[in-house]
Length: 338
Image (cartoon, rainbow, N blue to C red; front, side, top):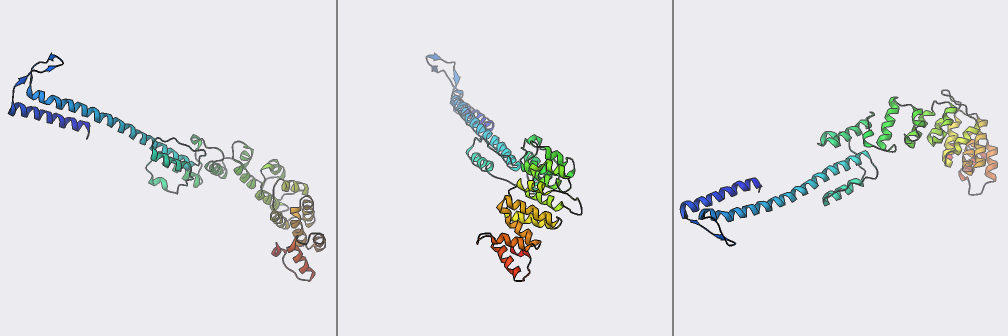
């Protein structure tokens, strides 16, 4: 019961009781003693109402106390609600090391789950959420997803954050920031974005610019470089020494080297291609299969057989099978054996 309504009802009751006693029972007055003191004479009707007044005051104090406790508890829930909203925002933004302090047990559990979860909002969710803070974040996320550039500075996200990376990628695609700005931004841009931009950069950049940022080379960018060697457009002239240094900067598998040889088969001179993989195989045994592939691809059967003859019985079985078929006059595509 609300205290205001309770007070009105109590006052009405006390007035009715006092009036009923005074009107229908007695109109006499009586003097009472209290701790040896004789109090002024009061109507019996008033004396009957006094205990009710005392009870009313005590009950109001009692209700006020528990109302205050309830208000404080409700305030904790309201604060935890705001914190859970912040936790959801942090989760949407992909923030790391998320940890919010909750006061209520139910929100503690929910907050712990949100702080330790990866949440991806679906497109169009902002139209169904009636919370300004969450809607603002959803609008930013949807904008980034659609290729727009947004201001993320107020969220203090690191350069490694996925939204920051995509936002900078959008800036790059829109031309508001150049490739070299990103390649030079060692501390400003995430390494994954810089490597991605480098892969795009090497498609047209001159060799000296490619070598300037060679610390960003990846398998993808290496293959882009290889595809430009002696190509009809965006031609790139690279010596074997430079190519070897590019290969040495990466940890490639045997299949990667074979794929590199395939790339070079389209434009590189056969003599340069053979020499390249011969040199690489002399420095790293993992390249031997790519060297064998190159020899067979160029119909250099004799040097390929010499390598196979000195190899261990369990080595290069598929190339040995191909060599045997060629000796028998059978012609197959070497690509079927790798």
